[in-house]
Each structure stands twice: as structure tokens, then as C-alpha cells.
Length: 431
Image (cartoon, rainbow, N blue to C red; front, side, top):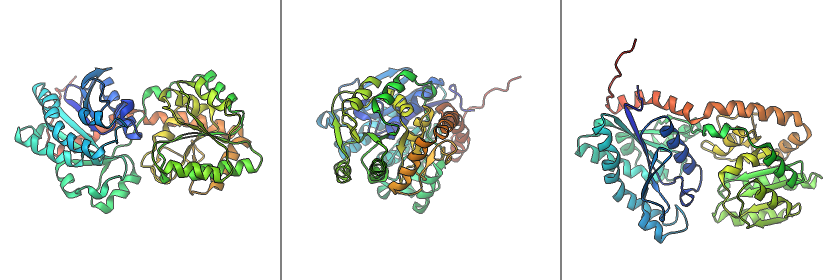
């Protein structure tokens, strides 16, 4: 029903594909979901807070990128959330006209419907502005408005009844759906996905280079924001417990810029773990291996420079485990991406619905270091367990590629469009 001949896509997201715009899973979702729509033939535009020095508009691999708030971003070079409040206000001023002229009118002229996908709390007020503007120009019945929650950030600032009146609210997992029920909304669950490329075989030589450089049977890898939700302390407690028991476990880590990071590193030192900050550029597997070799067996190697996405699959395969062991994880892209690469993902027990405990991943139920240390010990002592989990992980991750997710999304659109009284042209009968 919703083919590229009948539907166009516009996404509004604070984060996006630029290095300036990436801070977490939202940027990955925005980039990969839009890339997948474009690859499937849908005319797709991503509106996001982009690099102030990049073109205001450009098309990359069929995906039209529109960077907003560039004047504000020039005054706030520290990344997408630097000057966040000013950028939100600027988005509300800039975007209605940009979307009207760049997506709404072209779609209408081509006889196609437009799905406008707005992400996270920063866009909640914008949805109402868009609804009003569409009604003013007589195009509300040609546009489907959706607002998606990837996390619970900003929930207290959202006027839920007004939002649900003008848009269909969605979220990324049943866990998030349950968190949203107390706010009086019942969102439609449309899970996150991974790119088809994430399932490509990992270069075994690159993984072997990293594994050998670690010089440990237990190299754990952790990447994410410095937040208590991510259970950094549990990860460090586990490494300390393993080393105290005679296993030379190591943690390769890449955190964010959040202030909580100071407490994480202080906790590591309180545990007696040697922490080495690695400030050299890391451009590939060789750079990762060098960070492990030249830190001479340090318990914790803290990568302080940008870590390219392209090297993550090799790290996942080389590691004993990827620690995505969050206590609150709405979906958990890190764990799913690790599984796709053939890594052993250790996840929490919240929104990671792709994970089957000891079926294709390890699921920790507590924040105790001992639980995590025990799980890592099992992987070291039982290579056959590690091998079985890795094989199942790659197989099951294939169910979460973006083309699979988008196919289900388009079927959900039948209901969503009908609820908003948006009527698509029916294709001519065949056969």
C-alpha cells in the first residue's frame, strides 16, 4: 500500500549523521533509518542539527540532508547538545517553513503522502506547530504525523494530551511502552534496527590483531554515555573482582563528555585498577591494538578520542564480551550491533527484546559486579558457550535489519494513517 510511488518520508531529529551531531543512539537511528528508506526507493529527507561548517543542504546516497540551527551551532561548537535550549527554539522557527517548502509541497505535487517522523522531546512542541501549519495550507489530510520516544528524557515537559491529539505516538520497545502508560498514552511500538551492512562478515585479521594486543583471555569492551543507567560501576567492579581472582581481565572503554565520567574513573582507581587515558587518534583496528599494546596490560584503557563506527565490529568480535549492561535501556543498539558482528553482548533486562538469556546473549539481572564477573568467567572457561552465543547472535540479529523493521512500519501505517484520516491512493489491481 505505502510504496515509494505513494509515500515520502521526512524525519526531524536533534541528532544526525555528522560527527558534530552524534551523541548516542538517536543519531545512529536517524542516520540508518533514513538511509534504509532512501535505499528502498522512498524520497527521504532528514532535518537535523548539523555541523555548522557543512552545506545547509546536500544529498548523500539518495538521502537528502537538511542541516538546521547552523548559526546557533557556530556559537556552540561543543557538539549537538551545546546550546540545546537555543537550538530547540531555532528549530521551532526554522523548520515549519523548511518542511512545508522542502517536503510537504513537493510530495503533494507528486501525488504522494508524506510521513513526518519527529524524534524525542525536543520536537514535541514542534509537532503541534506542524499540525497547525498543515491545516492552514490545506495539507493535513495528506500528511501523517508521528512522534517517537527513544528514551524517557524530557517526559515531564511534554503536554501528552495535546501531543496525542495531533500525532500518533510511537516508541521503540514494550519496556518503553510500559514506562509511558503512567503519562496517559499508549504508544505504538516500532523497534529500532541495524543496517544490512552490520551483518557483513568482520575481517578476522583485524579482530585477531586486537585480541592478540589485549594479551588477556578476558578483554571486555564498553561504549556509551557516562550515566548511572549504563552501569559503569558494575563493569569496573567485575574487572576488579576478576583480577583479584587471578584472571588478568581488561576493560577497553569509550565514554562521553558527561560529568559523571569523573566519578566513574575515580571509582576505578578506588578499586585499585590502573587507568590509562589513550589520547592518540584511533582510525582502525591497528589504532585499537596499539592502545592495548602500549598501555602494557593496564586494567582500564580509556579511549579519549573519537572512535569510528567502522572499527566497532572488529572490537566486538575480538572482545570476550561487549558490556551493554544498562539498568535502563529503552532498546539497546550497542548490544544488537555487537550481536550482528558476532560478538557476545552482555545486556540488561529492560528494553533489549532481541536478547535471549544464554540463547544469543547474556542478560544480567542486577547491578552487582559479582554477577557480571561470574558471566565473564563462564565465557573464559567455556569457549564452546562463547562460540554458540556468537553464532546465534548473528543469526537472530538478521531479524532486526532496517528493511525488516520498515516493512512492519509500513504495515502499521495502514492503521496510523486511518486514525489521522489520511487516505492514500489505492494501487490499481494487478493480474
